[in-house]
Amino acid sequence: MSSRKKSKGKGGSGGVPDEAKTEAGSSQVENDVVGENGEGGGEVGGGGLKGFVKKMEGKTHRMVEMRLAVVAACGVAFRVLFYDNLENEGTPWSVFSLVAVAVLVVILSTWLDYFPSRLSHLRLRQTDGQGIALGCLLIPTVLCSTLHCSLHTAPHHSELLSAYLLVVCALSLLSLSSSLLHSIPSPNNITAYNFLAIGTTFALYYWLNVPYWLLGPCVAVYSCLVPWLLASFPGSFTLCEAMMVGQGLSLLTTDTALQILAINDVVRLPEMFLVHRHQSLLFVEFLVFGVLMCCVLLSPALYKLAQAKNYMDHKFWSGTFILLSLGVGVLTVLRWLQTQLNDTHPIALVVVETFTRPVHLVLMLFWLMVTGAALVLVAAQSSERTWLTPLRFSQPGSLWMRKSFHLLAVLVFLPSLALSSVYLSLSSSISLFLFSALELFRYFKMWPGGGALHSSLLPLTDTRDAGSLILSHIYLLLGLSLPLWISPLSHHHNVGKLSLYSGVLSVGVGDSMAAVAGTLMGKTLWPGTKKTVEGSAMSVLTQLVAVLAIVMMDPYISMPTLREWGVVSASVVATAIMEAYTGQVDNLIIPLFQLAFFLSFL
Image 1 (spheres, one colour):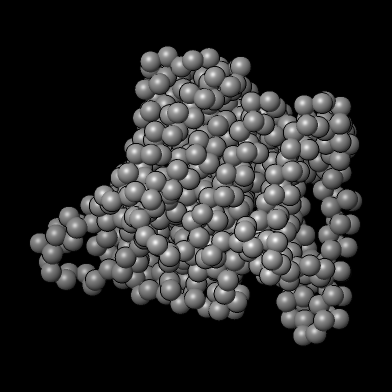
Image 2: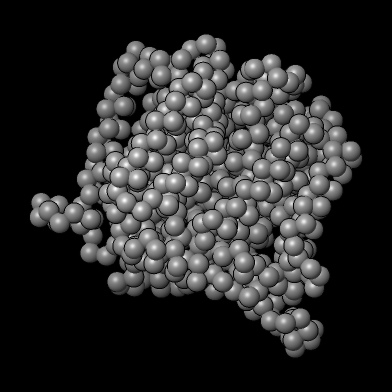
């Protein structure tokens, strides 16, 4: 949250028991009907056409999020269509599919304002809007901007990126169709949705020649994963967040599973799929896939752990899950990853990269120091020791507490990007695996220490973590690291390297300074929000100053031209407005939004 109106004593709702937290998260979101803007809608026909027009005029400011997402998607798509040499015949279709999704988003947003979608059974996280437009468009827009870069720097990746863009657009169409099914006065059930998914899959396969070995698994995973996330973790996701997590995990699991099948000679895949993947991206895919695979294969142990009534049973099933997970990881996941790394063991690769280059060793020691400071700060919030009192914030989940962690993240990423972005990319991929494993450890309060970890993190939560999951720190890591993981597919030379800094600029600098300025001197509110114009103005100003500092600090980035300064300024302004109006988790949304502009127009 940032750019807030100045107020005293307002903070998050952390520090509550997990059971109460879950009940609060689920009770807040059980609305009868939900429109595109997350508001309860009246019955169809109430007030007639004049009432509908008046209602739409009153909601105009709430459409800013949707309009920004649509403009960004169409701008990136037209950039590819009119300024790139499209030799692959499938690329225009994939880009046109993004434009089609954007048009359908506009149409469906208007439809849902008049015919609200009945989503009470989904138990969504309470927020100003559910972000259907962002959920449908943001990841396809980033993929399209990456495709634009790959056409110039890595054309051998463009065919696979085009196929994945078509697949993600198909997933967005499924989400739009599902929202439509829940808004029309006909029976809404899972059977209708499944038939729609199957029909869309075959239609796209036959009409657009989408590879069935990509589209089928992605649709299957997405159709099962998103409803499961919303049902199993009430209050933890908005529709936008669930859709984006579903899209990301669908692509990740499908891509990794196909690589594993190809490694073991189970299937023969076309040449377009067998392109080289950067080592940091391979680490992300295989390590996260390993966590998901352990959760699925060892789900009986997790069930027993959740049902354990006494300490000994809890300890036994915790140890069983941990030992079996280590066995699965060592015997399968690491071996598969080693094959993809040209028979270099992953652990040996990390050790060699760390200890054979002095700059990497210095960075690792610096990161350990920052991590130690973060752990002391976390411990201070839940500890009663007197020597930690100066570090304890008066209110759990307060603005100053959360932004202090943003500052620590900037301290980790900013110098590391200038010194060794490749090593930072590899290290952040391992950090994502550790964060995911620790959240699993905390959620089930596994022995040893899972309960203590749970108690330590609760005071750090705010309304974004109202459900049973605590994901803000994972979203922050993703927002800062995603530009690095896709950088081998994009241009990262000269001014284009600024795209690697999009997470640091938008969240670490812009969002943090907007929150501080809005709290201390904010007076003028953006229409319909609790964010201030002063906070957004400070966000724009500090990001532009940070860009100038980065250009002077990083020897690989030259001074931008007048046109490039115009692109940077427009991107920063659009990002600040999106941050002011979005009700989604800004740690993830804002960096991706800015990244799409930087990749496409710098």
